[in-house]
Image (cartoon, rainbow, N blue to C red; front, side, top):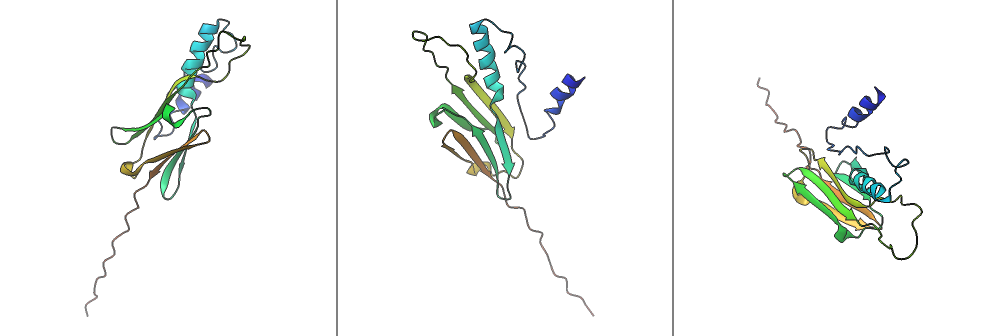
Length: 156
């Protein structure tokens, strides 16, 4: 029962389109085949890229830690007008000729995250920057309309 509630509780954020990772923690300790371990690692990299989403009075700010990646290895796009898509590919080191790997824990492979933006997002003004392995995507918010006040003259 706890497993079921943990799966469904991930969907509690209405703006999240988080992709569930079916391989998370299942095989890592019990897999002995290096190729199967690599597959599991690649599969979990797809869903495990963690991104923070903070809303300020002026904007929605997304931050992703992407150590070792260059900005040309990351893509930031808008789909269907209001879905922010952050994707990329972290290559695995393949130095098979010299040395022996004892442990491979860093994720590699493709990753993809999507976020449905709220109606107040100004999608035509999205900005992205990458510095020291941290991707920051800023989506400005439309200012809230101020209520129109009309004075009514009192007769009499």
